Length: 443
Image (tube, rainbow, N blue to C red; front, side, top):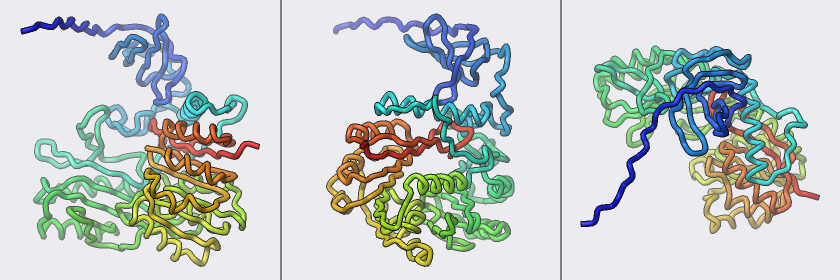
């Protein structure tokens, strides 16, 4: 039998240091330097001198936590949530809104410069930041159900853990949903078959509040009646979601308003969680595209028409492409519902925008302008086809800076320039970076 030598792992000894933070990284961590090594310090801000303890020590960098603050930055603010140090949802509440937004903007610009080769002189211009209220902005949330010594609680996941933090109030939820948390928890505690409960989806839109209760086993008649009575008392549209979605009470017409248009959706459909930023994002896209009555517009990843229908108010035609059949059908319904407000010819098609073999549905036509709003995976395959269409303007909405930079590199290589960049403060108090940019053809 051969014995292989395995070197003994070097034991990590937490080291204590005193450093001064110089800036923030893209995730809101303080960045300091000690003897040439970069140290990422959780919960520390620029210009703060702190005593730290290393929590991870690599060859080129280290991570640390703060033991003591010697001074506080003027950009440090008091978190509004009492669960801030425990809940994993809103980890940047100690940072002023201005610094959060500026840090995200600079991180995006640097990434586009490095990975896409974009020529952007952001220091010479005021950052384009599309923002609104920093709290009470979230109109949709998924809550977990937790049991502590047999007692039911609802809440969110703990930071860096699968444990559930029990919450009574959440300051990022819109007020209608925040006020519902305690009554809902009280109702669920009366359920007899508690172990059948999964998670809860809450949605607040112009048509009212929706509650979707996920369950893993059929609910008893008594429990169903209790939940129905709760929904009726609070004017809620209630659904049970087991093997399929079943409507229990309240209206089944769910919609939100955008530019005087009514956009209907089902409780399981994707909608933007921040209604104020969604409106401002649409307005900015319309401004950048500068739509005329002669424009033929292509909307990729169109969903149920969030951008398509506002663009159809003034254009000649809008073609929407989406990978989910149900959303395509919903977009068609929304176009008919708003036919008295839109002048463009609208058409919507189902197409997997990762599968090049399906692109003939849309890439054989001529379009003047293109808007795309992909998921986190981006739109690399679609990008290669967009450049063949050669639109004069492209507006790209992104929820992932890495895939945005990757796709923009191809646009730039094919002769497009990034003309405008904006940060969308869609998720204040979090590290998520949402953005939009406009590309125009060189020359």
